[in-house]
Image 1 (cartoon, rainbow, N blue to C red):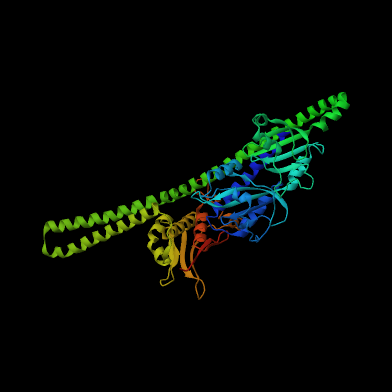
Image 2: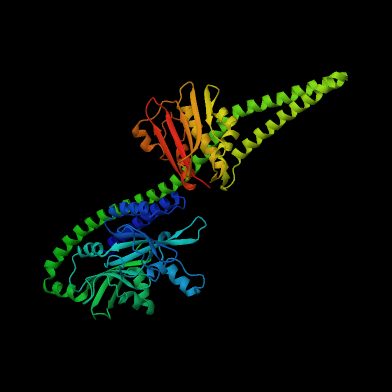
Amino acid sequence: MAELLAQQVSSTFDGYNVALSRIEEHLQHAEGVFQERPLHDYLAEIDQDMSTVDSLSLVDADGSAIAHSRYFPVPRTYVGDREYIRNVDAAPEEDAAGRDRLALLQGRDGLALGLPVTSRYSGKVVLAASRARRDVTGRPSGTFVVSMSQRYFEDFFSTLALTKSDRVALVRADSRVLVQIPAPAGHPSIDPQETGTLDAVGLASRHPNLARRLEEGTIDYVSPLDDTRRISGFRKVDGYPVYVEVGFAVDSVLVPWRRQAAINLVIAAIATLVLFTVARLALVKTRDEAAMHGLLLAEARQRVEAESALRQAQKMEALGQLTGGIAHDFNNLLNVVLVNLELATRRLRDRQGPDLDKLDGYVRGATQGAERGVALTRRLLAFAHRQESTPDPVQVSDLVIGVVDLLGQAAGARVRITLDTPRGLPAVLADPNELETALLNLVVNARDAMADSGRIHIAVRVEGTSPRFLILSVKDTGCGMDAAMLEHVTEPFFTTKELGKGSGLGLTMVERFATQCGGSLKLESSPGAGTTVEIQLPVA
């Protein structure tokens, strides 16, 4: 029984770790932008799928709840004094003994188990498990909390055929009782008053012989709580600082057996066979579930690595499309320089007076061609070796005009680009390199939507008479999209292009850029009527 319960508890706690990893990954994808409503909906969705959970919540570094699966908006309740919060990370000034105690109470992936408490949100008695939330630098930035349902443990443990003198308990490694069935007189099975310790573990810690027998899995002891002699089986829950105890009262076992030994032997043999069969089936199932949990964690890590690799692949794809056109233009510019210098050399060789007046024009033409080549090269290097995002005031009309040659190379010779970029519009606060990349992504998407040739119209305008936002729009005459495609087009890895022609991350990155700047992305399209994409950016 102890082995079966330990496997079940380990599988349950592994499930909590999987759920918390999903929440942490969801927060990382939010790019640091905290919004309580979407996070509440996400927590509630996970909560509904977990029958053992009373609630899921997120606590900030100051000890205040900022999101909850059952309440929106979450009551601004302080829980920083709770033990399950303090058990996650040791304070810098805490002594070595305190840090060792926290290490004793933390299990796989840092999941820590707190003592039973009465919830300050619902008033229910719950058993809380917690895990640190960390930022990209690895420093603590809050706590994830799973409140376990009291009814789950009571219902599960009470299915075992025990008498009133028998005992099933879940206890931490520091010997504090978390759950016990049946409950002591006058106390619930999960006691928020934090009363009592696991007497067997407490006794074993003071007697070496008992400690050795406890490690072996069985101990015969007299409980100081009710003076009942029990033979208890113990199992350490794999990966977590928790023991499971199944204890049978000696009197309740021996007295009936002495009275009806023969009948008891027959019943015991049948019960043992049935129990062994059921236990073995349950063990196989729980081990399979544990293996599936491991596969889920591995899949989550692989997805994060794949997304990072695809972002780099998309950048390389865009650079590859531009390389041919830029190399051609750069070659033409160098030819201009060479021809002008050759003409200048001939005139100097002849040293004819009237021709000397033309020499200045040739040299000036060569200089202009060289300067254009330098500018083109600088633009390519700025695109290829982008640094960390640094928002600055940007005149969007000037930026569009400055990269129109680059956009022309990306669109190709059969696509006509027209501009409506009036001067004098207010600036926006954005990273110019990120804005160039977003515009290039939209132009490449527009080009791919047109089979042979077409037109791309790029426009810049303000919204309203007292402008708070500036609109950069890209409109094409391509094939367009239906309503079903528009619902999914900004999702990562969704693409309408043929296999091998797109990663499905272009519009996702454009939308993320607009959101990071405090703006938004809007798409309008219909089959056969082209597509219009608008980036709304706040005025600086």
